Image (cartoon, rainbow, N blue to C red; front, side, top):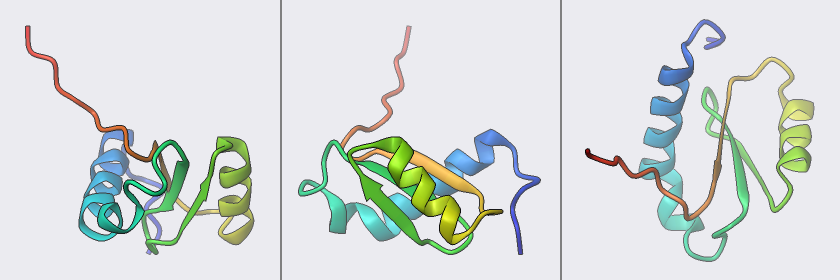
Length: 81
């Protein structure tokens, strides 16, 4: 099942969920600073210090995939006024 109809918000939500559940404990802190390109339908991912290179590899594997991209070790923080 493809997820191309998902909103940007839903892609981020799913990507963060997969990252926290399946990947964070395996990737941090050894991969901090690298770019993660995560295919949210399959859980497959690419890591590289260069975002363009990681994205190119992910696209080559699955051209029509839905991808979530983040820098490892950097977490979104909610600022409150």
